[in-house]
Image (cartoon, rainbow over all chains, first blue to last red; front, top):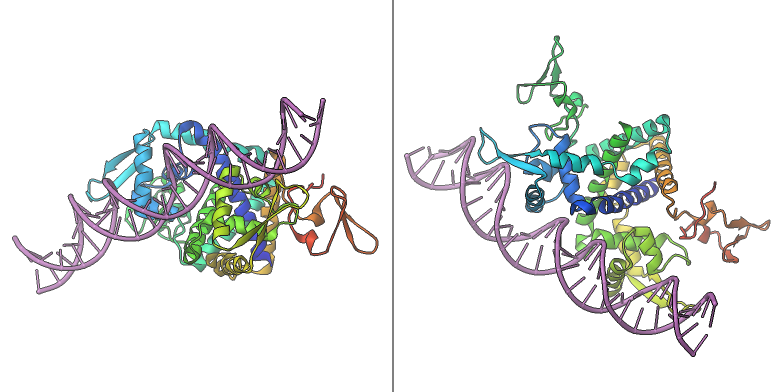
Length: 188
Length: 188
DNA sequence: AAACTATAGTATCGGATCAATACCATATTG
DNA sequence: CAATATGGTATTGATCCGATACTATAGTTT
């Protein structure tokens, strides 16, 4: 009967956070899904800051995501930049205004308040449990993992400490390898 | 930085399950929130099967929940019954058709598939971690817990094994004490 | 080089969510 | 019996979301 209980807990937590998020971002005139899209763009790397990548991450259709991004652009929270090599591709960058919205909204007030009641060990256990659950669900269903480069099979660290992506054959900085990527290859 | 990561994982899992749920219930012509409302009504006790209780559980406004329930009733998945003592109150019962929809949809296919990749110990750990996180968030924010009667401060087990709710002064069966209640009093 | 195909992205439409407001009916309190 | 509180419904408007159709660019085939 454990799957049912786990499912229930996730559903409850999901409702709590979503509703709290809704209240928190009302002052900015944003919707929960818009904040999530903005959040994604703030933690992804330069291969993954496009409408299509956001579509895969959010699990919606590209048309839906397109208008979500349109709203965010109109509000001045992100800017669009056409790719120099492939003119079909648009890169999305979170503006300073967008960053400050994220800073104020993520994690949500309720969540921040709740975490003060958890010690470091408990937080670690919860984090590990969630990571295991997420990765198991993703593997069992052949889904993209959207992990950070430092845990990616394509990532290669050279002797001088620099990083190289073996998929794109491009160097990555130590900051960039902490960002999530749509091409992430999880370890076997 | 743990709070951020935990928040991210919950958000990811939430998106995964919601989108999967959306696909799974499309054949019934239902929306995710409608399935969640139906699910709640299938696991709550007789003090908690009303529109107001569902409103508190789902964290929305009563107007929103009212029309969600209206759709479920029109589809024949639940039935309404006016309370005999307080004629303002309506009790909601999941029909046989509603039960079969729930059986087919909860947990979602993706989730069931994923859980086959987790052994019993791992499932237990994840369940415990989620329970701790949920209860901490609820306590820190003075929220209702919606726990089962068997873990409620009002619940009293008599010597002959029968149960009594000290809040309503009514007897409860062994089946009923496994259901969730809007008046649940969490242990100190 | 021309034609075909695939991919990234946008535009539009319709059904649904959701909050806000107003409203009705029943209980409870003074 | 009047005033207030509570449970629930109806309506409206902004937004979400998927489906479909469309444009533009890139790559591939002949």
